[in-house]
Image (cartoon, rainbow, N blue to C red; front, side):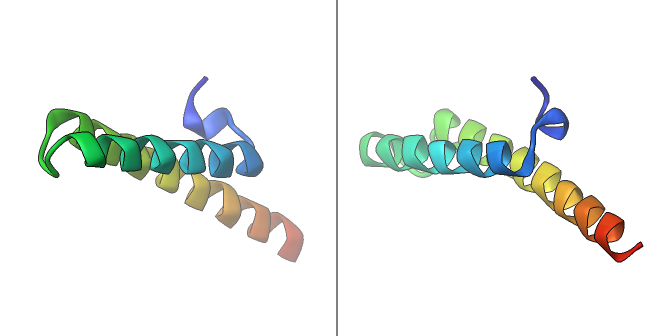
Length: 63
């Protein structure tokens, strides 16, 4: 499932899970390890999708 297709709540849950996994990885690896870079990329995609969803919701409620 693409992030754009997920609900706001699902995106928030995905982000929390990502942060949890990232914190575990940070205890094992260096900050610049490829796995950390991957987490950061996914985190950015989730945050972008979440921002779009919230903006859409605000537009719909103000119309």
